[in-house]
Amino acid sequence: MGSFKKNPRVEEELQGELSMGLMLKERLEVAENIAQSTAPVDSGAYRDGISGVVLEVGSRWVGRLNAFDFKSHWIEFGTATGFAARATLRQACERAGFYIRSTR
Image 1 (cartoon, rainbow, N blue to C red):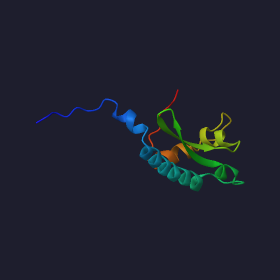
Image 2: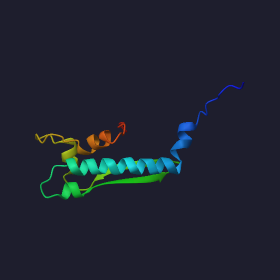
Image 3: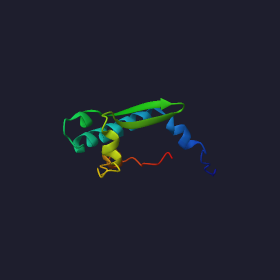
């Protein structure tokens, strides 16, 4: 009986598969819907400016959940003058099953 040898590049190779990109797109759509449904609404510009995008970068699929309203940064991270962070995008991604890691 032969022994099993794990491919040391299995995770890297899976990242480039089309099925991985499609799965990422499905999960990102869930996160987008969650973010839009939990976004604070004044004029609706913040909620309506939330959208997800999946791109193939090099040999990997990358997903981003963006908010394009000028207030987006304040809503996500808060301000030094007392506006509390809402973390709408982060919480939506976590609820959709994404693991958030810092890029710093």
